[in-house]
Structure formats: C-alpha cells, structure tokens
Amino acid sequence: MLDHVDVGPRPLSSYTHIIGEEVVEEIRKLAEPFRGARIAHINSTTYGGGVSELLRSIVPLYRGLGIQADWKLISARPEFFNVTKAIHNALQGAPYKLTRAAQETFLTYNTRNAQLLEEEYDFIIVHDPQPIAIRHFRGANGAKWIWRCHIDTSEPDGAVLEFMLPYMAEYDALVFTMDRFIPPGLEHQRVVTMTPAIDPLSPKNVGLSEGICQEIRAWRGIDPRRPLMTQVSRFDPWKDPLGVLQVYRLVREEIPSLQLALLSSMASDDPEVWEMYAEIIAEARGDDDVHVLTNLIGVGDMEVSAFQTSSDVVVQKSIREGFGLVVSETMWKGTPVVANRSGGIPLQMEDNAGGFLVDSTEECALRVAYLLQNHDEARKRGMAGRERVRQRFIITRLLADELQLLTDVAAAAEVPAPAAPAEAGADTTASVPAS
Image (cartoon, rainbow, N blue to C red; front, side, top):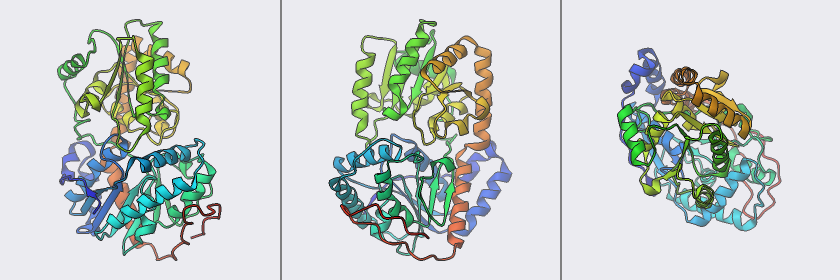
C-alpha cells in the first residue's frame, strides 16, 4: 500500500473567529453531499514544501466535515526524484533532454505506486508532476481524478510538455494556480484555477509573543538589537538565495548593522537542495552576520514563525514561483515583504499590500533599505498585508474551492476516455486527443 500520513480531524468551527459564521455555514453546505465520501490526496513528500503544508491542514478539515479523506505518499529511490526534479525544472522553463532512460525511470515508479494504491476512493487528487502517471496505470476504477499543478508551467520545455500532456488528459479535471500557468497546447474538458492558502491555526502561523521570538532569535545567534532581513524558502535556484546574499550586501553598504537569515527545510523529494546548500555556505563563509538555518539543525515551524514575525523585513526573491506560500505566511504576521514580481506572488501583494514588489536585485535592496529606515511605513504595509491574507488566502477558502470543484466534477456528464499516452522511449510528439 502507499504510505499513509497520519492526521486527525479538525472542526471547521475552529476558524469561525477568523472567517465568520456565515462563511462556515456556506462551507458546511458545500460539504454536506460528500459526507462519507472517500477522498485521497497523493503527493511525494510530507515536509519541505508548500504542498505538504497545504495537505497537513486541509485533510483534517475534510475529516472534520465527515468526509473520509486520506493523505497518501508515493515512494521511490533517488533516481526517480533526480528525474522528477529535472522534469519539474523543465516544466518551469529550464532546458532538459528527456532521454528514454529518464522516461522509463519515471514510468516505472509511477507504475509501482499505482499498484500500491490498493484502496478504493470516490475522488483522487494528485499533486504535481511526480505522481501524475498513476492515473494512467491505475485506471479510473470508479473514482474521479483531479491533477493539481502547483508550479509555473507557462513556458515549459516543449519535449517534456509533450511527454506529460497525455497523462494530464486522462484526468477529470486539471487545476492550476492562475490562468497564465496553463501550459500552451493543453486541451481538456475541465481546467480551473485555484490559489493556495495558508492555515492561520497551524503551528507555523498561530502567533508567538515578542519575547518568545526574541529568545528563539538569540538561540539561533541573532542579535536582537540589530536589524534582521530573512528569506524562508527551499534552497533552490528558482528561489535565488545567492541573489538574496547580493541584496544583503548592497543594503549593508547603507546599513552596516544588518543581519541576514536564510531558513530552509531540506525536502526528501528534491536532490538539488544539497548542491544549492553547499553554494550558499561557500558564499556566506567568513560573514558571521549571515545565518543559514535548516531542519538539519532542528529548525522547524516554531523557528520559522519566530523569524517571520520578528524580522524587520522578509524577502522572497523568486525567479519563478508557483505561488509562494511564505509570502502570505509572513503577511499574516504583519511583517513587511519585499518580493520579486514572479508567478503567484503579485496575486498576494496586489497594490503593494504587505510591502513592495520589485523587478531587480538593485530595486530589492533599495526597498529593503527604505523599510528598515521607515518603521511607520513598514508597519502600515505589514498590517495591510495581514488583512489581504485574511480576506483571500486562508485555508478555508481553498477548502471551499475544492469542494465546489468536487461538486462540478461529480455532476459532469461522462466523457470518452482519452487515448493512452505513448510508452517510454516512443515518439511523444503526437498531439493530445481532444476531449
């Protein structure tokens, strides 16, 4: 069987003080037809990324509504994750030669995981490229299948997209973060957009006192009397941590007392993090005011919360970004953000609510320095960001969106099954069958 991630139920009423009774009742009405329904969410890791954080919060909410929701985890050897990381990057626009050997590795592990999916479900939601072909090898088996893409696939590598398109076509619905991310050439009967959201009641977001934040910062070597700039993200080239170091050095020319913290969780499905980690350590060597903090030394949700809450400025310098949950997490804490105008980040910071959107390293440094020197403006923008998150990016809104999608998929008329994808090593340039 696929690995099962153990989570308990959480009552929707826990969020009433944040979203209001009327919204709670609307969600309960959406959920009522699915009481007793069996739903599986499938992904590739339990930690180290936004998808796992979403599932850790939303699956308990399903259960609290009387829906039999499970969180399932695929298993594979490093060779598979090496291939899927390359595919992930290629779908975001990086060049990659998809060899026959890579295709076979990808399909072999998808086949094995499809065989391990032994339980029967009414709905199965598969997240991101790693397990996408499970639907093909498992067959529908009476379930409605949804594929949820969390990355920016607006400018994908053509050969990799051609390889993936037939597997997408077999799903009953496809979900992307925004319209711009829908890949070119995709033809499907049901494509929807849905932004992620944060859980304000998760350990990372419940809120910490100033005293506890300062104690945690001091424990990790941060001088509480001096300004602090932070980025929280995977150590991934797309997150541009080396660019963050450049911003820090530019700001230090004006504010010499500045400190920098780079926080990351080393995810099990991302082999690239180790190379990036080594580059960061090498680049920061000799500067005692740069603090590289990861789960390898016990950094977890509480530390992330403390740094997001008590930093003077948080940056998110992503080159490509599916959404960037850390932006909403930080805004929820009222901390100002300076972020690249990338992917889903502008959706969160529209009209500069929460801080500033920037387009270059130099502009990022200028905005960070401005916020460090203008505390009232920083606080004003931070509070505007918190309110924007409350209105648009709370996990209960995502739950309502998913329940509406399940309603639509369940009501949809049956459609003919699309043609089977090409086998590994075969010509993958054929057009996707129209639905």
